[in-house]
Image (tube, rainbow over all chains, first blue to last red; front, side):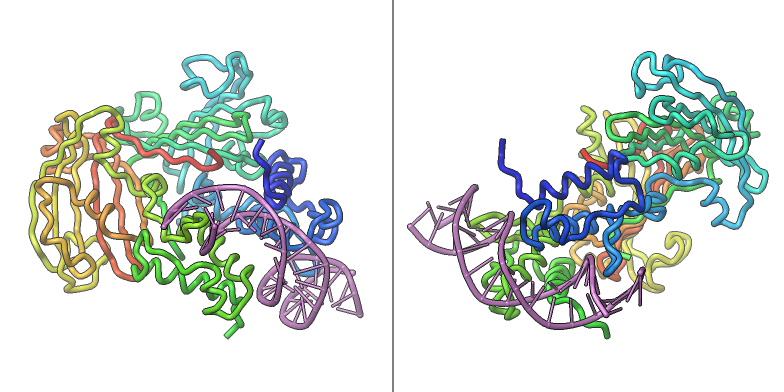
Length: 235
Length: 235
DNA sequence: CAGTGGTCTAGACCACGAA
DNA sequence: TCGTGGTCTAGACCACTGG
C-alpha cells in the first residue's frame, strides 16, 4: 500500500468516472472550489489534477463556464481509427456502403479470430463492402459484442457502415491494429471485383472499452486504392 | 504578441534546447533552485515547466540526482519507427542485411519522390535487402541527406542497415509514414526471390529534424512475412 | 548526510466570457 | 458583472537517494 498523492487520487477518481461512462461527454465537473471543499485541500491540488486531465484531452476547461468532459475527439481518434465515409469524402469521392450479410452467432471459430471474445459470448457478425465513387474500395468482416453494445440491434447497417456508427456512439478506451498485406481470398476478390489473388492491404483491429471487447474487424483494401498515414511530432 | 505564461516560456526554452540538440540526451538540467534564481520566480513555476516536460517524456527527474534529458526511448520510438534488426531478433530469427547499391547523387527524379529534399541537395542513395533467417524479408530504397547527416560517409552500410544506424545516432523530431499494398515491381520481386507481381506491404517514411529532411525510405515487405502493429490506450 | 524533486498550503491578482 | 480557471508567490514538510 504505497501512499498515493492526493492530486493523483483526485485525478484517478475523475478519470475513472469518465472512462466508465458515469460522467458522459459534456457532463460538468465540479468547480475547483467545490473540489477543494470535498477533498479538504488547497486549490493548487485540485488544479493539478484537473490540469493533468485537460492536458490528456479528457476535459475541456473554460473560464467562467467550468470544466466539462471532452467530447470524443474526432481528430485524435481519426488518427487511430479511420472513419472511411469521412476519409472518402475528404478525397472528393462519393462514399457508398453495401451490406453483404448480417446475423447473430455465438463467438466460435472460424470467425472469432484468436479468441477476442469470451467463449459463448453472443455477437453480431457482419460483412460488407465500402465503395468510393461506386468502385469497390474495401471488404470488411466484423464481429460486434452484443453485451458491450446492447443497442446494436436497433441500428440499420444496410444504410451505414457499422464502423462509423460504433466510432460515433460507443466510447472506446483501447485499440490494437495489425497491418499487413495479402492476396485476396476468392470470396473477397469476387466482392471487390478483382482477380482472385489480387494484392490487398489488410487491417485487423480490436477495440475495447475497459476490459470488455467491443468489436473485431478485418478489412481488405485493394492495393493502390487506399493508404494509411501516420504522423509523429509537432504540427 | 500575446503574453506567454512564464512556466510556458521556461518549458519552451528548455524544450527547444533539447530538440535542437544543444542539450544532448543525458545532459543535466539546472535544478529547480537554480532556475528560480535565473528566472526570478517561485519554485512552483519552474516545477510546472519541468513536470510538464517530464510528463511528455523529454526529461528524467530523480530525487537528489537532478533532472536530465531523457535518452531516446526505444520503446516509444519503436512504435513509430521500427528497427528491423531488433524486431527480427525479437521473433527469434537471425537478422541479415545485404547492401545492393550505394552512391552519391543530387536530389532529382526519379529517386526524390515528391520533393522531400531541396532541389540540388546532395544525398546518399542506398538500396538493400533485409533478411530473416536467411530469407528475404524486405527490400528498401533510401535517400539520406548529406547536409543533415555529415558523418554518414564514415559509416559502413555493407555491415549494418542504414535505418538502424540513423535511428540510434540521429535525433529526429517528426516523421510521416504512408502504408499501403502493391504488387512488387520486377526489380524488387527479383531481389526478394518472389514472382514478379507478388503482393507486398509498402511503407514510405520521411523523417525530419526540425525543418531539415533527414531521410526518405521506401520499403517492400513480402506479404505475410511482416506486419505492423499499433496499440492505443492504457497498458 | 544533505541536496533534490514531490507534494501541499493559503493566500493573491488577473483574464476571460457566460449570464 | 462576477464566478471561473490561469497563473504565481513564498513559504513548508517529506521521501528518496547519491555522495
